[in-house]
Image (cartoon, rainbow, N blue to C red):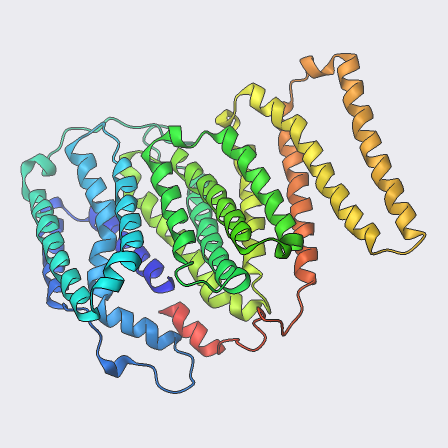
Length: 466
């Protein structure tokens, strides 16, 4: 995953540089030459000399093996998405190219599902490599045809494009710095949650063959739905779903081991879907005009690669357990708060009002649950104090609600959005405390601890540079 995420970043960087700084004629011939060079590296079957020998950490060997066999073909493949969308934007001004990205991820999902269940059991390794090689040749011919069309005057001198609306920017100025930071942070958070959830399911919940396919399929599905149309991501309903998912995950981290494997897998998969839909749905809502399309995808790839590096390289050095899952959930909560603070048009007035009333009840319920757990492990008189705090807390909330309704403040209050953001910030703090307490209960040396499997620092640094 680390190799393909980093090389995806390289492919998007190539697409961005070529589209922005090269003339269409030069770009077309350069891409055709790159396609021919990739064909020359076929077949992708690696030599036995690449097989790791001895007890050394295989990280560097695996990265070099992948780079020498599928490096150039995958670089060309990875650049296709933004390149073809950029060409489409030139050829058809005014039409959105972003549904093509949903179509591309649909192809990825089809390949992901079909390979382990059809190609893997029915084809030998050499036959798979040959079939993939011929498929790549067919792809190269089609893509080469499109790239050479850049030489035509239709693409070289296209009509002026009608500007699409760009969030937080004046016409012609480009996206703001804050928007670009969200372009980076949202896919980085989704990438961390994908890999961390995969580790959680495959190492802590159940060591089931091919279980890793489930979270990756969910990740791709969220991209497909988010970029197909805005109608697939209604912000209000997914806000409610994300709040519920984070609450359920906090409960699972404490008491989920008593559930069946199927129930745990379903809960983690559903929560991952909601988190990825939030990240990718907000990403699509912040999409720029076609003029900044390649920059948009380059930043997305950079965020995904950063998330992959964090989980694959830095987390084993920083954490004694798989705490990247906790950090991913906390980061998702922070981004959720920031998105609501940033965008007032994200929700309708009645939605802000509903969330402002719902969030304090949920936050107090989570706080009450934490106090109840604390009281269960405390001795007298500490247990009595915990009970008194719980009663006082709910009494205060009930009195406040009754007072507002009695004085008519509920209808005349104008700051529902501010109140919602305030409660979201408080809920995010409760989430952080919950995750911190759960992480503190982890014991070194357990079956899921990293205490005995820490990789060598040198290999991690070399892998990160690679």
